[in-house]
Image 1 (tube, rainbow over the protein chains, first blue to last red):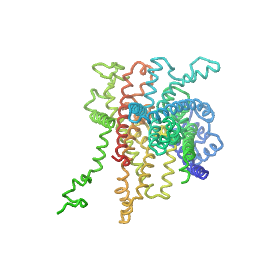
Image 2 (cartoon, rainbow over the protein chains, first blue to last red):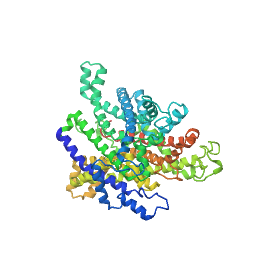
Image 3 (tube, each protein chain N blue to C red):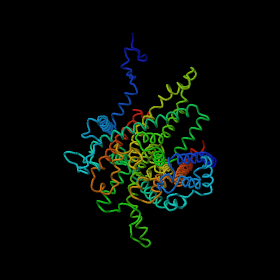
Image 4 (cartoon, chains in turn green, cyan):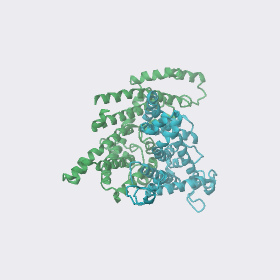
Length: 320
Length: 303
């Protein structure tokens, strides 16, 4: 088991190096830099050159790359040009909101998908199964932002059940705990919308995994032993069927901070997604590079965790 | 001649119980596909959408770019079945032309992605060794970037245009196909017909193209079909953010962008709900077809 983990970790290192190179190249490939949109005629070309020199934009590319890498490894992600604060601070501000939103939607997604998937699998080909499958298909076929727009229009504007966006009620200063409750109230609709997608995708996975497990011989043995059907399904079948679901959980890890970029825009939630999108438009390199790197590293960690967790849960794959 | 039941010749072939009709795999596949009613429905819907898109110049009631400033934000009426938008252009016509754009971008993006993916996967699976390691590491690196993140970054490097959108979409989804093709080729390499061809002296390029790839097709076809659905969704997202197909060219995605204004979202539903529904119809019908394809091409299901 240890060898497996160590092998995975060693494989991850060149991938991470490659990620840094590609992140840097992508950011540098973007036309323009933070100073190219200054239209003030009083700022001469010499001034612009001086500003570029000061921020290190005139050095040869590989020198810039190594400087950036050196700073990164020391934990310094640079200073955002548009927000005028260290990128790390920006991440600290925004990550809480995004994490909360995506965690809630993940919980909703898995919390609903697993029971629904199990129920639908035990009633294969019945009406429940067909309805469930249809809903799952609808869920993965509708663009997420369209559902968000529909939800805002009909639930927030139409029925006035939820606020139309933002994180807090403007102008209201609530004391604890009402300020947190206010935030959760604002996050409910986005979390529901995102959760809906989670449910749709995961439910089919759970269903097909369950179906495969139910056909196995040991399930028949359990039934032949006289165990109640409920015990057979929920205690024996479900545990084995959840193995691939663990993989999906690991793969959803990067989505916790990088998911929902479009939905954050629509609901005007000040999270990682909106910050990222704004910084791309503003050509704010430190933020773009820092965030992209963070997202990619999280994906690598997520894949690694999924693989390792799979190794824990399914002993058969450790010995390859 | 005495009837000897142990010998099967033309005289008793029909009573022997052996399968005497040779069916091409195409026929077998179609018979299985036909039974999946949802897939057939999906096929019909996407066929209708495709025909309407191709026939756009003749089907659209108005010119798609013709502005009519005196008639802006008009509600649906006899004259304009779906109303007009912020510049007075007829929404139904833009919807039909937008369908053409969205479907085309989806198809071309998937073609790019499949071509790249098959190239990388085939080379990687066939040659193995250092080529395989290098190509797969590169694929792993690209896959590590979240889909949307990579698309947004690439789309902002290239200026928004139809062609750049196709490139951006294709450049992000090829790793999945590459892994798939590589896996198929690795398992096919063990088969005897490959060894036979190799020992006959077939050159590697010909071996890959003529022998290996045709047998790896089935999962690639399924992946391509589902990929078109994904590409249409992705194009809608990119265009909605303003990074995809630029105005004044209509696409279902950038027509949805109108809903970001409060007045349009709450009072002018005809402007943004039809494009959303069209995306949904196109994507769900392609998904149903792809699912049906996957079930009927699966060699493990014996009838």
